[in-house]
Image 1 (cartoon, rainbow, N blue to C red):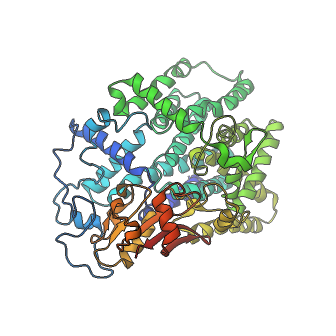
Image 2 (cartoon, rainbow, N blue to C red):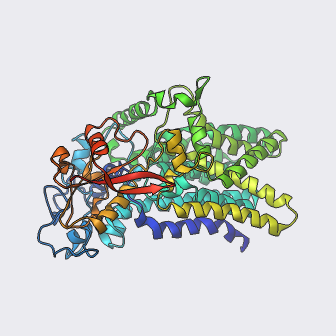
Image 3 (cartoon, one colour):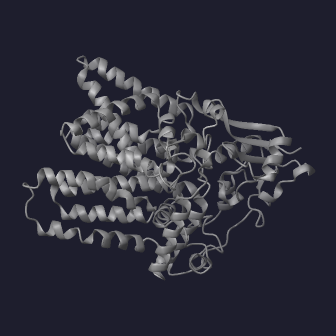
Length: 568
C-alpha cells in the first residue's frame, strides 16, 4: 500500500499548486464564447428555460460599456474594488454569471446562430457546472476562475492516470518522473489553468488509451465501456479523439499476435466492442444540446468546421521548416519549448523504447512511440496544419513524459551509487521547476536555451513566439488596477472587451473597444498583446505601435508579450 502512494505524489502536488494559482491566470481569448455556450445549455437542462428572463438583472456599474463608475465609493489608490466585487456587493443569494448574458441563451444558440458549425460543447457544459457550484451557489471562486476549475480537475485526473500507468508498467521511479514531467511541462501546466479545449482533449485521449489498454489486458468489458465513455467525452470536446484508434491499433495487433493462445473465452468482453461507437456517440450527443434538434445536421456541421480550421491554412508561415514536403515545425517547436533536462531524458528514453521494441521486450514500447509520434506526423504532412505553436496536438505530451521517465529510470538503474543517481534526477527536476517558477504565470510562452529563451525565439522569428492566447491580459489589468488614474478609460483593439477578464478590472475604470481615440489623444490607456505577427493587419494596432510609447510591458525571458500605452 505504501508503494502505491508514489503515483499520487506529483498529481496531487499539481492539483494543490494549480488550485492555489488558479487566479494568477486569465482567459484564453475564445473562452468567453465557450462559457456562454455552457451556461446556456446548463440553464436549459436545469430549468427547461431557453432564455435568462427568470434570472435577476445584472446590477451593472455602466450598462452601456461594462465596467465604469456610477454610485460607488470614491476610489483610493490601492483600495479600489474590482468590477466583480462591486457588482455583486449586497447581491443576495445565488450569483449570476457574467456569461449568462441576455441574448446568449439556449434559444440564441439553437435558433440565433450562436452555435453550430463549431466545436462541440461537452467541455463547455462541465465548465458551467463547476461555475454553478463554486461561483453561483457558494461563491468560493470568481466567475471565470470557477469555469477554469473544470480544466484543472480533468487535467489532474489525467496526470494521475498516466502516473498510475507508469507505476503499473515500469515501477516507482518511472511513475514519479512521469507524473512530474507531465504535470509540470510548461505548456500543459499553464494552459491547464485556462485553455478549455487542448488540455481537456489531451486528458480524455490519455484516459481513453490507458483504460482501453487495461480493458484488453484484463479482458474486461466494464473497462471497454468506461473507455467508450472517455472517448465520447473526448468527442464532445474536440475531434482529435478520432485518431486514438490509429495510436492503439498497432499495439493491439502486436499484443494479440503475441498472446493469441492465452486469450480466454469471454463472450461479454467480445460483445462489448459492438457498443464502443454506440456509447461514444451517445455521450457526444447527450453533452451537446445543439444536436438534440438535428443530430445529423449538427454532426456534419461540426465535421465541416474541423476540415476548414484543420487544413488548407497558409503554410507560407512554415516555409523555413518544410523539407521534402514535410513540415518539421511541430517537431522543432516541441524540442525548443521543452526544458533541456527533460529533453535529454526524452531522447534517451525514446532510443530505449526503440531498442526494446526491436528486441521484442514488450509491445508497450510501440504504444508509447506511436502515442508520441502520430499527433506530430498527422499535422506535418499533406494539407493538415496547426497554428499558435503545438497546443492543438498536446496529446503527444503524456507519451513524451513516459519516454522521459524511461530515460531517467535507465540512469537510475545504471548508476551504482543511488545517491548520485537521485542527485542527478533531482537537479533535472529542480532546474525545470525553477524555470517554471521564474516565468510564472507565463509558462506557455517558454523557450529553452537551445534558442536562447523567448528573446532568442524573437530574434530567430520562430512562428508564434510570445503567443499567450490571451492569458497575459490579466497581468496587464492588474497593473492598471495599481497604476491607472481614477476613473480612467481603458481600450483594447484586437478582441472584444468581454473576451478579456474584465471582471478583475478596478470598478472605477471603464473598458471598451470604443474608447480608442487615435490621433485625438483623449488620454485612454490601451492594453494589447505583443508577439509574432500580432496585429500586423490591424490599422489601429499599428497606429499605436508606431506613434505611442508604451508605459508598461510584461516581459518573459527578456522579451515582451503584452504592452500598455497611454494615448496622450
